[in-house]
Length: 392
Image (tube, rainbow, N blue to C red; front, top):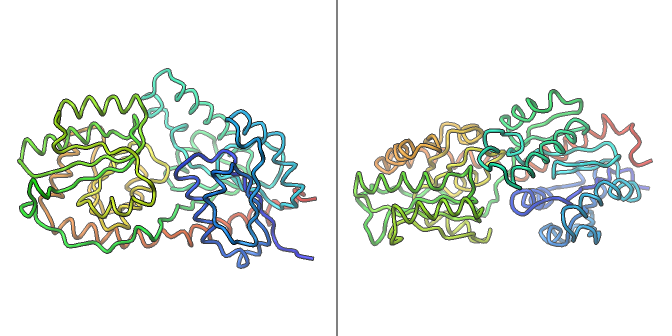
């Protein structure tokens, strides 16, 4: 009879993007037997489970029909059925990476992946809207979850500080475990050319990959590049890639129409499949990240691994990740954004130095490390709180 650990994972409320990528990558990188794990059972919607690794005999995937429904059905399933399902499967501990949990199964480890509910200044950008209400409700549910959890994982020291200010000290164990970056993005920094080597046919390409949203400030970046066009007459091109919040997209469209009505140098390209991002990064000369609210800026990690010199928002946790390997700016000040870009564009040696430095830092953010630390922590929480009798 096996005595190994059985871990349940609640993937019911994982949205698209980073949270699903995280679960897929840590399971793909995991060596369960080094952690004394016999089985992992993941409950999730079919589209979530489709992203998980296949041909893992220790990994069981379960798709309850309720998880194909809307938020209310998923939340009711989590509250009323998940704990019983975990006990029936013989789970010793439950991992809830989505951040909200209302069951009675213990021990449970959860994870903070969304900073917007905890940043009042950022929430005010949404005014009186459904988005603001949703984030406020998430703050209540996640705060309750963190206070009741046996273990909480934060992605950055910054996120830990901000959330703990809202929740007060937590009774359970706490760990800071950053995400990793896929090896598919790895590209040795290339030779940096002076701006004189570029032309209107082959312009210097500035890239910003991120959802168009109120706290992402794409319009300020557009204004900054327009200022550089007027000031220096440099052959610059700006590419904006990502999904869009409709209201924020309207603001971006107005700015684009004002400063570049013919679309001669600024382009919003819409979302790109994850598999194409590697090629998009490799086609750029400088990467920009202008967000004022992040938990773990995965886009920055991808740009670092892609060998790009980076100009970044000076809001935390971006400096925590980039350290001294980027140029920083106020994301709400087009003049300051233009200053940082001018510094990079006019100094190829600086671009080379920063790209090499950030590329080296990116090698420490591996999914293998993330998986090892995550499941070490889950095991530690079970050994500390497993007496609560979850599997009995």
